[in-house]
Structures are given as structure tokens and as C-alpha cells.
Image (cartoon, rainbow, N blue to C red; front, side):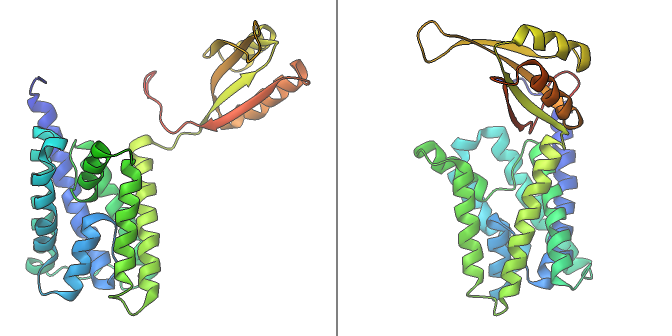
Amino acid sequence: MKEFNLNQELKNYAYIVFASIILALGIVGFFSPNKIITGGTAGLALLLHYITPFTIGTLITAVNLPLVIIGWKYLGKMFAIRTVITILIISLAIDFFDKVVNLNPFILEMPLASIFGGIFIGVGLALVIKGNSSAGGSTIVARIVASKTEIKPGTVILVIDSLIILSSLFIFEDTARVLYSIVSIYITTRIIDTILTGRLNKKVVYLVSKKTDELKKKITEQLGPEGTIIKGDGLFEGQDKRMILLIVEVNKLQVLRQMLKETDPEEGFLIITEATEMLGRGH
């Protein structure tokens, strides 16, 4: 059983409160006045708000709390408690800004509202995740479905968001709103990725060559000592293979290309992939 850490828990709730305020400002200041929606159950609550007399906060609570109760055992006790508290704070903050403060719209232009609304929602959701919590909704459904089937959580969330967007076609007469809603969802996902994984200017490079000893010496001299030599077997019996794994800054890739071209131009090659997240060594 994990030991309760008061300082960490206080830090979690600080993230949750700050995130809830940002989410509420994004919805009340950008989405609601421009009738743009976002993904997940927040988007569903916005859609229902446009066709019913209920407040956005009330609808977010009504949509999410039953899902949290159903998915309680899939979330874990502390995570579920934080999720319930997060949903309640977000709902109260939205209705506070909307009904009590009567917050004026930040902008009444759909293009700008979709961009900046997406940024606010992205920042808010990323901070919720940093607070070891969830804003409920599609995340819970995704966890339940993934535990019962072989469908990936990301696929479930994509399907839910798509269904919400398609449903909005029957509510909005202006299809431009639907398209700007898609823009806002895309921006939200990019912001979440950026905050949680950072903007790395590095690439993962697999360098395959029979001249790894020569390359190892040049790499150490010109790029630094960090790297790993991976040994393996080829498809043919008794065929030894060696590969160098490196994390290289983008501006040094050309140096590595030239190095390989000079050392093993006939058989050497590079495989370059994105480094989406790095942990350890100061990261």
C-alpha cells in the first residue's frame, strides 16, 4: 500500500485548483460565448447547455459523476477521489465566472476563440494530469473499455470526441463552428503534449554499421561520450550485428551523417526517430 504523502497531496490539489480556474476561464471566456465545443464530456456538457436551460457547471457534474462512480474500481481510490473533487471544483468555477461574476467574453471571433480557448483547455488539462487527477469523462470510459477489450484508450477517446463533433452538426446551423471546434481540440492536444513531455530539440538515432569501433571513437571525440552499443544476431545463422544508439541534438545530425558517410558509405545507415520524452540525467 502506498504511503500517504501530505506534501505531495497538497501539491496535487494546488495543481487541481489552478487548473480548474484556467479551464473555467477557457470555457466561459472563449467557448461558451462563441458556441464552440471541446472534446470529452466537457464538450458534451457544452452541447447540452446550448439546447437546455441548465448551467454548464451543472451539466459537467451530471455527466461526469455517474461515470466516476461506474469507473471507481478502475481508477483507484485516491485517484477517484481527486477526480470527483476536480469535477466539482471545475463545475463550481465555471458557474461562478458565468453566473456570479458575469464574466464578459474575452473575444467574440471564432478563429481566435478556438485557438486561445484550445490553449486554455490544454494548459488546464495538463495541470490536472500533473496533479495526478482527471477531469473525468472520456478518460474514464477509455480506461474501462481498455480493461475489458484490446482497444487502446486513445482510440476510445478519439471515437468519443468524433461522436460529439458529429452531434454538434445537428445543433449548430453554422458548420464553421464545428470546424473551429476541431481546431480547438487539436490545439488542446498539442498543448497537453508540450507541457507534459516538453519541447525536445533532440532525436533518437540508431546507427547501423560494421565499423562501430571507428564510429565510436569519432562520436566520442565530436559529439560526446553518451551512447550505447547494442549487440544482436542477424537473420542468418552466426551473423553478428552491432548498432549504436544515440540521443543527438537536431543541429548535430548533419555532423553524424557526414561522419557515417566518411566512415562506412557503402553499408552504414541511420534510423532517426523523435525523442518525445526524456527522464533522468537532469530531464
